[in-house]
Length: 74
Image 1 (cartoon, rainbow, N blue to C red):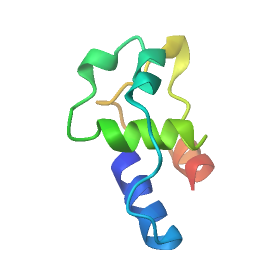
Image 2 (cartoon, rainbow, N blue to C red):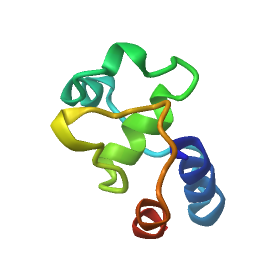
Image 3 (cartoon, one colour):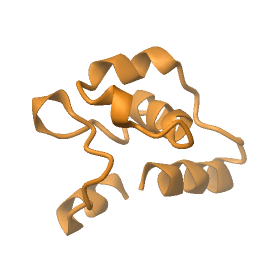
């Protein structure tokens, strides 16, 4: 979902990427499990205030987003 949101942001804003600093991943206890192919989208989405993660400071990459979570992000 982070990648889809980052790509949508790029399309709407005309910017190729959300701003991002890889240090933002440090906020997540499960940062080691965040795939390298989505890290830039996650970082940019976190720094833009679009994604905050789950309970207990985890990103939970393998979990499905609920309808409520998707609606909040959109």
